[in-house]
Every structure is written in structure tokens, then in C-alpha cells.
Image (cartoon, rainbow, N blue to C red; front, side):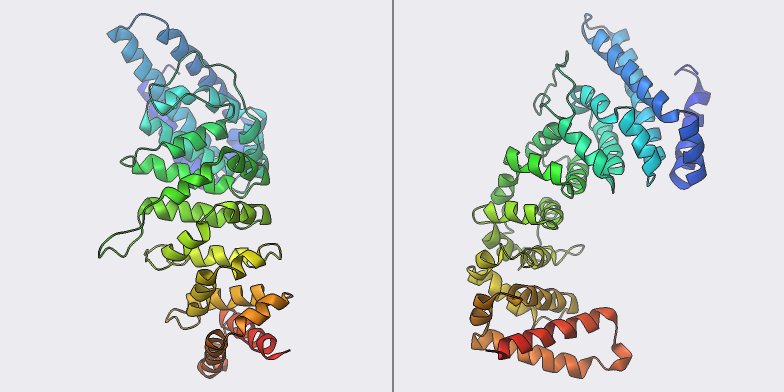
Length: 375
């Protein structure tokens, strides 16, 4: 139907809602080639926008452009809901070249924050638990763009390059787009290919320029939390852990950040240390940093059980098959904390409180005590 037809918008809204909640609706949409038709529509809109931009500016053209933007918004939202938690639909979008099409539209997305937000939502859904989709962000290139963006920089060689550039230059007042960019990057950070692009771009250097709260403020900024969540996802693989350790001063900054609070994610710096401790190649660098060791040891005396578990698990991982760590952690102050934590845990967790997490905490402490008491 024509974009001027009111029924089209009503039908699109109904279909969006249905696709978001119904797996069968997604299956029918896939059979009916909804994904391909949305992609064709997006290509057509891109061609029309570029054509209109070459004509002299007129009010009528501006109105027509607004119409195309609305059409583009509907197409992307339909795609987003169609792909939601559906690998078959994501494969169809990959084959239909979703990423190159979005890359071609990038200059237009940069000029409209609401449109950018929808595009990023679509990309978040597309890349979630879909490694092939993540990889497609690295090699997508759509050649030269006839329209250059008015701000935030022109497109890079891949869509992922564009995203990294956007995240680096993000105006702080635009929190909605900023949050979506970092959520999207957190998806990509689980992909080996994407981590390689992040490393080559030197994007992680921006983390070191974050400022800590001043005065009586004890809470980390929302931007800092977004960065920490990204680093946590990067730290799940050994290649990502190496990237973090290569950042000069990163461990010290994470140590400082661990002293501050944030309601939604209070222990992310500790979890990053925890992950890094599991790789044999990383252990010497962790052990050489007294601040990190002090933070992990202090976790054993924390009032919060989550912090206790993270600290105990990290220290056990660090000391496992690493004689040098055993020598360092036999420090009387650390050994006393381990012994006291183990003694208290045995008394506290009676059989009635024997949950899997409590059992794991006890196992961590038991192994720590044995290793620190052995020669």
C-alpha cells in the first residue's frame, strides 16, 4: 500500500506487536518474504534520499524526505521484531545483506537520533547470540556515499568502524543513543572477529580517559558503567583479557572504580579481575599489581556474599598451578583473611543453607586453605 494510506501504518503497528510475541508469526513472516521485502524497501528509500539530496532544496522535498524517514523507521522496526530471538530469521537477514544496507544508510542515520536508535536496536537484536551476524559487521563495506553526514564523521570502511567512531565521539547529552551503542558493542565484544577490529582501532584507549566521581559523590557515572559492561564481555575470552592488560594503567583504574558504587552493577570491576585470573598468561601481571591483590583479598571480608564469592574464586584461580602466587598469597594478612573466611563460612552455611553458590564458595575457600598450607 501507499505510504499515504493510513491503514498501512495501522497494519504495520499490529504486525510489529505480533512479531514481538509470536514465534509462529515470525515463521509466517519468513515464508512470506517479509525480511526481503523490508530490505528492498530500505534500498529503495536509500536511493530516493540520495536522489533528492542532489536536487535544490525545497520545502516539498523536505516533506518527501520526512515521509521516507518514517517509512525507513517502520521497515527497521518490523525487521527488529521479526529477528527477535529467531536464528532462522537472522540467517535470512544475513543472506539479504542487512549490514551492507544499513551501512549505506549510515549518513542518514547520523542525522536523525530517533532513526539511529531504531537502527541500533535492530543491530542489537540481530547480533545477540548470532556469531555470523557479528562477523558480518567486520567485513561489510558499501563503497562511497554520495551524502556525507553533517557531524560525527563520515563512514569508515566497515559498519563496525562507523559504530566505534560514533561511540568515541558521542555527545554526552544523547544518553539513549549512547546506551544503545554500548549495548551493541557489548554484543560484538563476544565475537573473536569483532574483538580484533576493536583492538586495531585503539578504541579501548578511550576508557582510560574516563573521570572518577569527585567530592562526596560515591557513584560511578552511567557512561562508566556502560564501559565496564563492555570490558566485562571482552574479558570472557583470553584474547580480550590480553587487550585489557595491554591498556597501560587499566588495572589501576579498575581498582579505583571497584571502590565506588552503582545500584544496577556493583561488582563489574571485580568480575573483570576474576575472569583475567583464570588465564595462565595473565597471572604474573595480576600478581605484580598489589592493588588488585588487595582488592580481591578485601572481598573475603565484605558484607556482601557476591563480593565474597568473586574474591574467593579469583584468588583460587590465581593460585591454581602457579607456585609464585602461592608464595605471594602466603602473606600473613591474606592468609589470615582466607582462614577466617573459611571458618566463618563453615559455621554460617548449615545443611539448610547449602545452595549451589554457597557450596562453590566453600569449595573455593577449602582449596585456598589447602594450597596456602601446602609447601
